[in-house]
Image (spheres, rainbow, N blue to C red):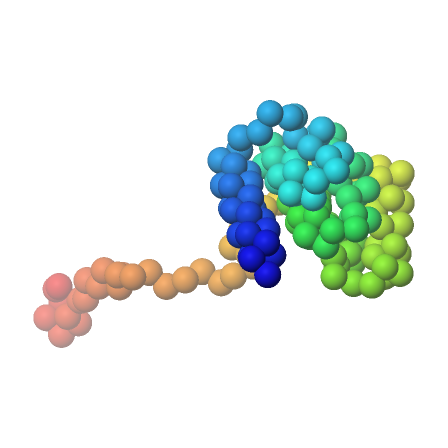
Length: 155
């Protein structure tokens, strides 16, 4: 039992160190090489890096990672693809293998047909939302219009 506790603590410590390194952007391997790592945490780290860099050249590999055996890697891959391409083609990392496979086929078809464009080429979500919302009232009321006194003939 003692060994299991040590292993769990070492795993948590390793995860914490890995996540802090990942958040800081450190790591010796290039992000695309990390995508092919045998370690799920390295793959996830690489996914985040290519997403942050806007690396559209990594999209093909990200689509491959939608079939990763690790659910967290699949989750990061679809998040990166949504960030880069603005699409998800119905992929949910937690779906069963058959549903995921169908969504991956849709991704591969989109790649083959040249349908994917960088997300920044499309209008941003914020701009679309602002354009569709009615204007908000001002915090300060408009200045009062001068009134004329009709009886006296002056203001």
